[in-house]
Amino acid sequence: MPSVPSLFVTVAIPTYNRAAFLSQTLTGLASQTFPPTQFEILVIDNNSRDDTRAVVAAFATQRPAPRYLLEKQQGLDYARNRAIAEAHGDLIIFGDDDILIQPDWLEQMIAPFLADPHGHIGAVGGEVIPVFPDGLPAWVSEWHAPLAFRPDTGPLSARHSPMGANLAFRAHLFQSIGVFHTALDRAAGNYFSGGDSEMIRRVRHAGLAVWFAPKAAVKHQMPASRTTLRYATRHAFDSARSRVIDQAGQNGATRYLATRLFANLAKAIGFAALAILNTLTFQTGSAKKALVRASRAGGYLYQIPRSLTGKI
Image (cartoon, one colour):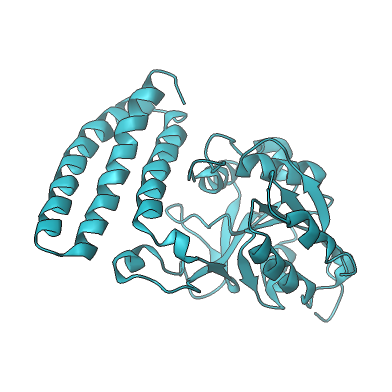
């Protein structure tokens, strides 16, 4: 970078029991071409039982050295909110603990903000490219692809929301629009999601733009444990539940959820029947895909009555 940027940046990495992956992410941060005096690294340990703390300590001579924070309240968004409370940056970039990054990642992520002196951009999402170190089964491949929202850096339409694995915000925004909704994202024992898209919606409601930076790409590692039928069905079930929880807080929620209840009842029955048929005809991959879709419908069926009666 030809000159020192005018913004100080916080890179926040929430983590839970992924010490080996975390080490790779921190190695990538150690190789950034971005000036080391212009950013800090926060590693928010959400009660890991592995050697996460030792991994962070191993990077003590890195500049900047990562700062270790223990967040005992279980859940991804509790860890994100701890990062917001501890951050010193003008920008906060959230990254997953299993991403692989190029040396110019930080430069590419902050470039839209630097070109926006009047502060019209509230958030920037980078490209997220799934990679599979243990291989990718054919039946699950259709659910894993790069975001590919647009080929160049620029604003996103309302129908597109970046991923929390690679997402930056102006730090001051959290003072006015609030912090992450702690009921929407994963904690130990579930695979909830949606906190990042809900936050993006708040940014847009505040009248600010959300941009996409395809050159600020990260590779998101998906080990074999995330390509099993057990994981896929549970993830589909819990993702549907978190979507319902998100929708329940919006205007017109009761009518929307009631219509989704009946639609997903039909889907659950139809996809379950399709799974049985495909199993009987030895179409194993198709059977698995139908089971995943039935599980997603089941998540709606489970959560909608709970949300309509005021339960999480």
